Image 1 (spheres, rainbow over the protein chains, first blue to last red):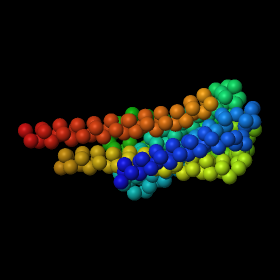
Image 2: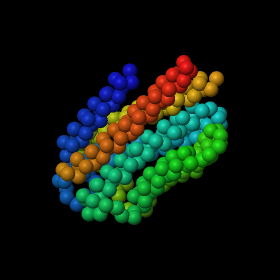
Image 3: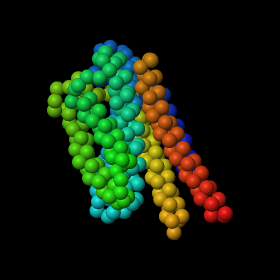
Length: 218
Length: 42
């Protein structure tokens, strides 16, 4: 079942990439109207949305843990943070590549770019915090959950930064044709599916490890 | 086109890199389980 789902996700991503690479231009910040570079949005935007969604899952898991103290919430939080880090890396890297191609600079201090970089750093800080805290598991999980809830404040910043402040990064883009709309939504669905699958794999590994540790201790 | 390939390549690299890490964790778990079972048998 897992293998089928994984290959389905890979197939969807490949299909969306193929469509994304051929779908043509998308209205966006552009120096050259017919540049294929704008096709990067088919990888960049879905990854960004996935990174933000993973932070939402992390928030729900953190609140769930603080309310119930169940380890399953904590495992979900770890999985969401790790998968979110992967997509935040993709978001920032593809953003840098797009920026260099279109604006001739790898990075510039604009509100959206700063908040996106902060999102990645917050994920990394969360993971470092988890691994560096010592003491009982419950204490580590509780402290990490509190940090995750506070760090979530950056998510609305990422969303509203380009809308309410002057920014080189466009707040949204328009589709030129239905073909582009299909390419974008296929990219969105496949990337979210992939993120969910990775999160499921990671949660499964963590719960198996916890079960083994419990069984060997008893 | 070079930039587009670099961007999509980064996506694949990140996803497969993470899958590689998960795979190593599963193998490590299997090794530890085998070692524990072997020590229990002794």
